Amino acid sequence: MRCDVSPSLPCRPQRESSAVLLAHVTVFLKRLYPIMPVFDSSQVVKDCEQVETLSRSRYAFLLALCAATHLQLNLDVKQDHGVLQYSEHGRVLVAEALRALQEFDPIENLQIDSVLSSFFLFSAYGNMDQQDHAWFYLSQSISYAYALNLHREQTYASLPSAEAELRRRVFWLLFITERAYALQRGKPVMLRGSIRKPAIFTSAAPALLYGFVNLINVFEKVTPEFYHWNSCNGGGSMDIYALSDIYQSLAIPLPPLAEIPETQQVDLVVTQQWLQIRLWQTITDHPSNCEEVLPLQAPAAAGRAVMSFLASVSHESSDAHGIGIEQKLYDLGSSLVHFTQRSLPRTTAQLGYVTANVAELLFTILTSLGRIRGAQSYLFSSLLEKSESILGLDAIPQEMTLDMPLALDCHSRFGEWKTMLDNHPVADKHEETVYHIENPASGRSFGIP
Image 1 (cartoon, rainbow, N blue to C red):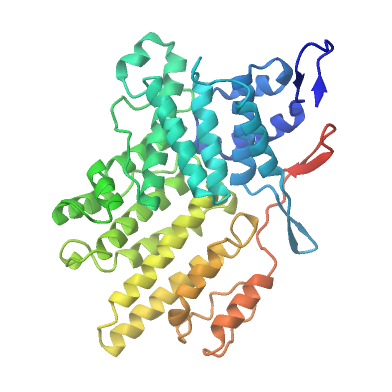
Image 2: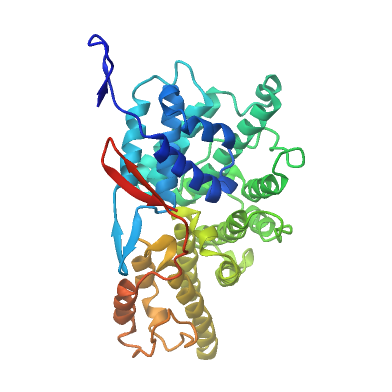
C-alpha cells in the first residue's frame, strides 16, 4: 500500500507498473487483437506508459485486459526440465482488476471502458473455467452496452467516425461472443444484429475487418429462435425444417481467407464447423428423425475439415483462442462418439469402416488436446474416457503417433494411453523472445513471450 503525503487523505493501493501493463498489451496486440479489435492500440500503449495519471475506469480496463491476456494465452504455464509448472499471476491480475473496479461507480459516468472491463473479465473467468462468473460478466458487459445505446444505429451518428467504428466493433464482438457462449451453456440471447457492421475498406486494417465481419456473418445464420429453443431444452415450438435451413446455410463454403490473419482464419473455420456439429448434437439429443433433415455423417465431415485445417496452421494461431478452442475440439470429439453410437445398427463391414475413421479423428483431436496452449487440456481425460470403446479397437492408424510407441494391446490401450500422455512432455513449444518482468512492489516476476 502507498499512502498520500497528507494524513487526512485515504491510503491508495499502489498501481501495477507500466512495465507489467505494457508487456501484456504488447502480447495482446501481437496475438489476440485480430480476434478482439475493439480499442485504439496506439492510445492503449500510451496509457500503459502513464499509469499513475489514468482515470480509475481506464486503469481497471487495462488490468482486465492484462488478466484476460494472461489467462487466455496460459502465460502462467512454463516448463522446467520437461515438467509443467503453474503460477498464479493471472488470478492476481483478476483480483487487482476487481479491486480497481470497486474504487468507483461505473453507472454514474458510464464509459466504453466499463463495457470492455466486464468483457475482459468474462474472458478471464471463462479461461479459468469459472463459468458462472464468466456468464455474469458477459451479461454485465451487454447490459452496459445497452445502457450506452450501442444497439441503436442513431447512437453512432453523433460520434467521431473513428470512435463510432470502434464502438461498432465492441457491439459486434459482444454479439458473436454471446451467441457462442449461449450455445455452449444453453442460454437465450439478448443482442440482435440491429446496427450496421464495421466498415472494411475504409478502415486502417481492411483484411482484419474483413475477417471480423465474416465471423459475424457466420453467427448471424443461427437465428435467435434456435437459442431460445435450445435454452428450453427443446421445449416450445421449433420447426425441424427451419433447423435444416440453418444447417444448410452454415454448410455454405467460407469466402477466400488467404488475405486475413491466420488467427482469424482459425476462428472462422473452426467456428463454422463447430456451429454445424452443435446444431447436429442439439437436434439428435431430442426425439426426432433428424436424418431426414441433417446428414448423419455431419460430425465426421466437420472433424476432417477442422483437423485438416489445424494441421496447416501454427500452434500459436490456434492457441490464441484460449479455452474456447479446447471446448470446441471437445464438442467435436463428443459428437464423433455420438455419431458412432447412432451408426451401430449397421453391418459388421460398415461398422468397422465407421469406427476406423472416427478413431483416426478422435486420436488427432486427443493429440491436440494433449498439448494445447502449452499443457494438457482439462477436457482431455473426459474425452479420452468417452472414446474408450472406440479407441480400444484395433482401428487406430499406426502412422498417427505422438512421437512415442503405440504398439499397445487393445485391452490395455486406454490405461496406457492415459499414462503416456499424462507423462509426455508438451511438444511444439515455440521459441520466442520473453519479457522477464519484475514488480518491485509485490516482488512477483514472470516471463511473457
